[in-house]
Length: 322
DNA sequence: AAAAAAGGCAACCGCGGTCAT
DNA sequence: AATGACCGCGGTTGCCTTTTT
Image (cartoon, rainbow, N blue to C red):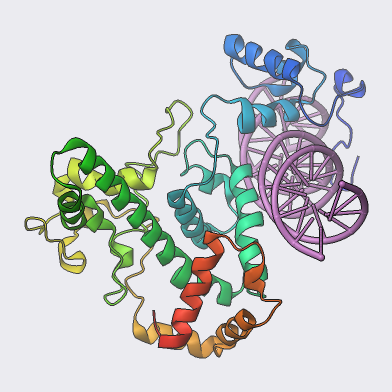
């Protein structure tokens, strides 16, 4: 027993025997999947025994939830998912399980790993703590808006492709048309009007269901689904005249404003000024200096993802604004 | 080409909460 | 009410792969 009275060793006789640890074999996976297919999940310790597995119940549960479950989503974290993770983490911190509820098919483990590898890497490159205000500001004012931009342009490109494919218009006409009339205008991030919060940052429980155990994983992200929802539920959106969309005046979402709505509307020039003053801009200067030195941190594994960051920082240095 | 370092990720561990007896 | 088993969460570890030197 430990100091709190808990048993340190599991009393179950089965667990006294040699239990297998480490990576799962295909045969073990097969046993586990087969058993769950016929008997369902839960009661993991007895499940493990009955399935003929020399594993702890915990191990079986983990293997099932993080890997074998049919609705586990594979592949890279999408831009939309990245945006959601950053946003939800800013709100809830390391509540991985809670965050994972809003990313169907993604496990808390995966999100946690994403955070630890990708996000903390950026913090490291900026030579600041991942929990510091400085880094939070970087995420909020640089990273997330940039993600929105990238989502927007990717979406626009997809629309162009679709339009070109399904109409007989010329390529240039199709491009021009889609740039001004597609749903993607909804995604427009207006740096001057600072209206991002009204266009993204909305996690709508109507569209992102925490209980995804029986929901087929859509190839389309939930965020995208939400954005396109303005067509399905036009009553939530008003004031759109023709194809002209004016973010600040037109979007009306009070009825569905969710609990976890993240308000970016307060992002004003004054806020930026305060932010800059508080951080004394030292980190921007550091970045600027680093770019011209041979051991620039931006040279570390320079991918597209890292480059945009550099570009934004430089733009800020040059203009003093975004 | 080989060694070292870093990255990525699956799996494990301890803890606290809940449930069943 | 007390106890032990189970469950789920968040932190951490360790191994395999990839990148860098």
